[in-house]
Picture 1 (cartoon, one colour):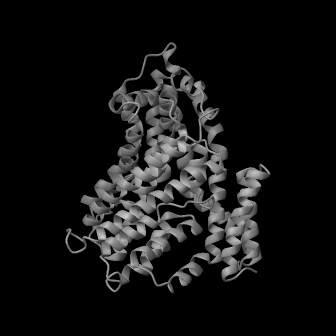
Picture 2 (cartoon, rainbow, N blue to C red):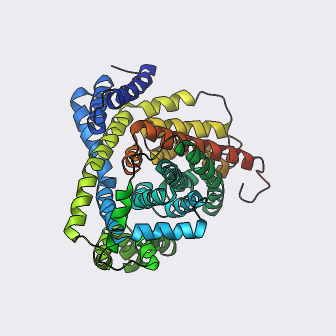
Length: 453
């Protein structure tokens, strides 16, 4: 039975075995994740007879959150692609920003979209767009995957009203408005460094090759043979529809607080739910985009179903592995170890959240756990609550490993192998978080001078 420091060693060994199974022995990620989760669970302090249940619970809980989302997201994306809407959006962005500045267009899009929309939903909605732009610009898909994913996770971890930073602001006693402003401010250099700059660097080393080909363009332009061309306005409108629906719930909640029984907030809480928003978008797409699609509607669904099956299984397995890691108590062990360290509060907060992010596989859990421990003692640590909270959020940005279901969403929708995902997503996220930390430290130098600090 693994306990204490040997438990951490066991976790690291489990990751190594996972890499070997997938990379060296070419096992499928779904089977590999379940095997490693079972092995770690049996060797830990979890009662052996409970391990299968923990794995099933982790798998089920993960799919409860993203299973419907993945399915609807792929269907919605397929309708956009087959109607030519994605191609039209890509052309529109390129006409505004130009080929050379297209990475900045995606960076701006990612930050904007991530504020009202959860990471998984936003990446799934936009993945066809970056594939199309990659084909049109001849810039590596890995570059755009890095920019989109890092932009989304950075904004998701730092900018209110997403749950993680919202809880952090509450636990640290920060002013919500000030936390939003400074969170937005420090997220920008994080996205530029970890997304744009690093994305361009790693993209030169991960070529498109057979990752994308002209058939992807043909798929998105299939309407041109015998069907009228879709308009730019309708294309952007369809892409924005699920985002607007989700955002509507956020905005209504700002004006209708403590009125959950009223019709208006109840209505928008339903249509603004990420799953319902995508379902509505799929239904609208079936009718609004039909004149621009060559294939039968049934064919669109068949193509989408063929794509989403494996993604759903691997994502669930990643959640199962993460649940086993959480149940082993590694998080509590790390917390106890780090509480005895003597280091600056900002760095301690960052490392706390970063290590929990890597070990537990969830940015939100890492932020909530770290802020619950360090938030109430912000004043005793002699640091501004906003500064401490931002340092915690910076730690939750990166170092995503295969025990994070988001890792597999990026891998499969970004058309990256596991090692490529680590290079693009994991390292890029770490660089973004570290860049945010540097700017948080610079902000701390103006504590007491700038408003809210």
